[in-house]
Image (cartoon, rainbow, N blue to C red; front, side, top):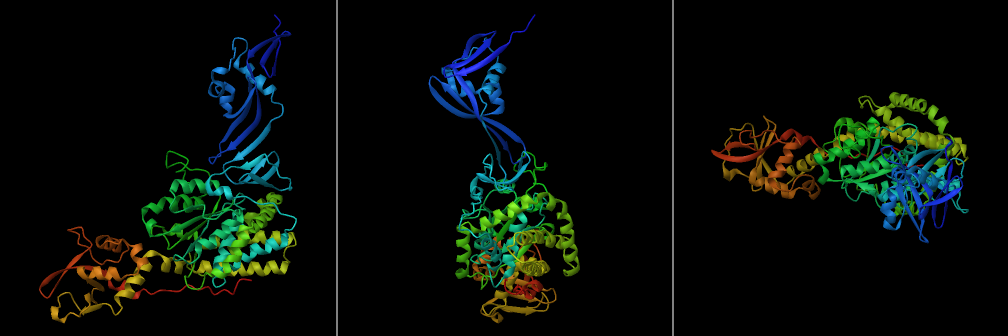
Length: 593
């Protein structure tokens, strides 16, 4: 028996089935697909959608549905309701879908990414940003874009205008090295992150940048200039320590191949609540995969790699940051006295707002796209060469990660300066001088990491402040050679607060005088530690400042008999209080060139 042949057709009145030359209407509406969308999620899974245009009773409706909903026709009842009539006795669902596809000869195909960065479309590689993309051949394809949420929407690269001088744009971004003339470490570290970020698809970075300094030191303002290299609309940091760990991780996953500013670590975050951020970001960067907290219901699975270059800022180094995480972080300390010059920063902010840094970066990204395969083949060898250079020149006794951190950061300068030479923006001699300048800064900065760890962590800041105030003229201590020495109350100095036992190297502070001591500490230190008296001494114990603990009562206090009386006192480590001094960290490098 010969099978019946059938065809379909659509017009403004509906959709028809044609079998053996006879036409029969089986839907009172016509439909066609006008757009197919492939959405690549943060988890790397591709989800497909179609935009359907329907003509029903003379009206045109348009809506987007998932590919599965399109094929099972569930959208008919959802979007058209009872107005739509379909005779499935006349034709199957598969026949109706085939009829729609036949009517959809011309349809737009779009690839949307939930992550920024590199994406292959056909045989062409693109760097996608929010709403657009940078191609290697200069022919922008509007069919491949990134669609990201929140502040990352500002990641956009404006096209160069007829008045734009490419050479001047490149020199302006190189001048970010001068953002803090008295502290060139800051400009070097920021530029290293900016130039290194766009190489992350070729080799994942394993180090992050962290600017540490008191409120008002200019750390956030400086870091925003680095963020502006990837879009002129970043008026504020895209995320901060105030955000939830899940939110920060999701933002970091989306910010592929750009820098990501995580702003303003303060005393509020200096407890175990900071651990997820440190692990989800620094841990993920170091291990090449996210912890998967944000994308999975289990905390044991590993998510996609974080390809952002994180730049963190904070008033101090997180107290809960373990040594392995510090080792993957390059800290630049900013003094609140003289490093940040408000009269200088305005010029950088203007260039950032005008999109000049982003324009310069679009030129560099196009260069990376054009040389993607070549860079991919050689980048490990270049990294190893810089690592050997660091091993020969860095101080002894540094963490084993130190040479790799130097090599990681120098990769950005290596390829940006090579781009400048190949495009005739710089002479080989100029590029050589800049390379040496930034190399010297990075070497010094990495050599100084142990000092920064010691002098900028919260414990040290507390020690310095308390030691300073205990030794000031406001307070007096009675010296004793042992805990049994009798001292009468009339012998106490007027501002007496406690005793020093040199044999035990312990400082005993009277409980009632301890309140006076706390009140006289600087506000920033009282903010670091809890304000209440009981909580303050618990923090002192947590920081390792207490010498003894009353185990029986579970208190961070001891009792010492003086003059026949029992005094409630706090016992502190005397040697710690008297040996810590503030250590200025001034760079030895020459001014930025």
